[in-house]
Length: 293
Image 1 (spheres, helix red, strand yellow):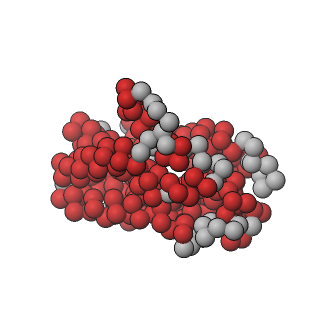
Image 2 (tube, rainbow, N blue to C red):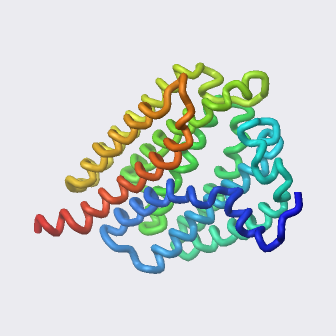
C-alpha cells in the first residue's frame, strides 16, 4: 500500500496510539508532585514528561514490531499498520531508537539513580511483548509496565526508591493488569489453537472477569493504604471513591457474554481513572491543605 510520505509522522503516532499516553502520565505526575511535596522545578517537570512519553513510545514500538506476525493472523489486529504494509518495521524502529536515546538522556538530566535504572525500565518494556508466548501472566506483566511510571517519576525527583511509592506502583500494576485481562478476552477464540497465552485462555472468560475484579479491589486497597501512609488529605480519598464507581461502571459496560462496549470502557474509563486520581492528589496538595491552614 502506497502512502504519501508527508503522512509518515502522523502514521507513526497513529500506529503507537500516542494519544493513550494519557493513561500513564497522570500517575507519573502523582509520583512527581508527591515526591516534590508540591511543585517540582520546571526542569524536573519537563524531563519527567519527556522521559515518560519516550518510554511509552519505545514500549509501543517494541510491541508493534515484535508482535507484527501475530497481529497479522489476529482478525482484531490484522488491520494495524505493520500487518497491512502501511508502515515498514524500520519506520517504527528508527523513531523508536531515537525515543530510547532521548529517554536515557532525560533520565541522565534528572539524577544518577534515574540514569542507571533507565536501561532496566527500557529492557522490561522491550521484553514484555514476548511474555504472551510462554505465560498466561503476560497480562500481569503489562500491568507492571505501566506501574513503572509513578516510581520512575518519584526517583526522578528524589533519587531514591521508597516503600510508599512502591505501593502506588503496585496499585497501578493491579489496575492496568485488570483491564488488560479484560481487553484480551476478545482474543480468546483466536488464542485457542495458537501458542499465545492470557488469563482468559488459561482460566476462561468468567474466571478472567473474577480475577480482574480481584485486581481492581486490590488496586483500590493499595491506593488507600498509600494515602494513609503518606498522610494525604481528604480529596485523595474522595478520588478513590470516584474511581471505585468508575470501576464498577466498567463491569456494567463489559461482561463475559458482552464485550461490545470494550472500546468505550478502555478509552474513557482508563483515562478517567488516572486523571481522577491526579486531580484528587493535586487538590489535596495545593487546595485542601491550604484551606485548613
